[in-house]
Length: 223
Image: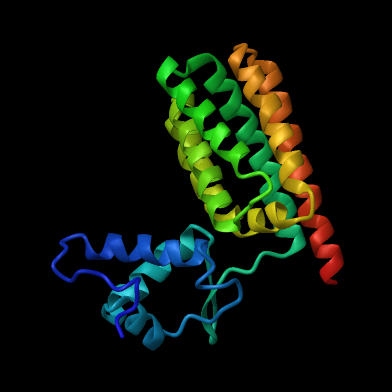
């Protein structure tokens, strides 16, 4: 049976598409944190050569999504509490900057798109689906970064966000967390509506700090 991640061999950008497809499999949780990545299994899963798999592994290792252990081979990176804390600390600074930049730089169309995505998130309250929530949050950040109009910030945030998606599933699945998340994002949206960049930045940093605290509690419960 052909895997849903198998690629079209006629595509001239096969290598790039493989990286994207492997990244998607990791972010979707089909390749779980800590899982060993056998070259044979990867060639079967994606329908490509071992050489292309090795190249993709190197690219994703550089992004932090894959860890290559000497004499053991590559595994999907499994974040511990220390790594998670560091990721959220940096994310707080970047997300705060993104919200401040968006508040002053975004076009009217970008602002309306962001507000519409937030309404989409609000409509999910009470019928939360983890995958749909992660997709909506990713759309929110895509729009936010586009409106911030800062290519360096976008690159850094996107790579960081890819590493943090698995942890976001933990925060969104925490009991009662989604309603609180909506309140926090709603306050940020209000600051953006008022073009109050300092307040948007402050609220964004507080939102990320709250999410980081949830993740640390989840680590506590799993110890």
